[in-house]
Length: 89
Image (cartoon, rainbow, N blue to C red; front, side, top):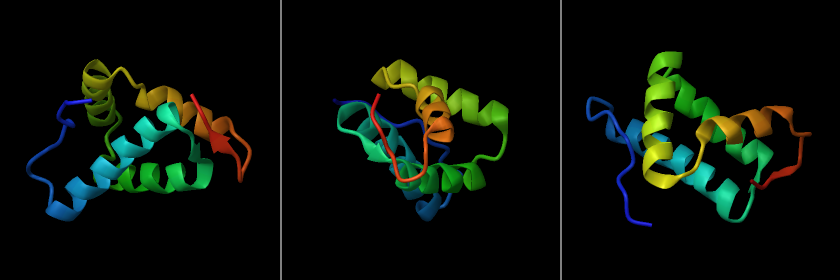
């Protein structure tokens, strides 16, 4: 798919890369499945960069509008999944 990830250009390059990895993990959960622990590592790093729930919701809503993939649903599924499981949406 061709779309731009929602980013904050005040973030450092390292932070932008980490947020992109999170978005890619959400895509992977929908397209082929992702290991729960791998996804949670990306999500935890995302939350270090975006600690505000309001900002997280804004970015994830923008991402869902562009991609059709819900960060929220993947995060909820990952939180409820057993350790060492694979998340497939």
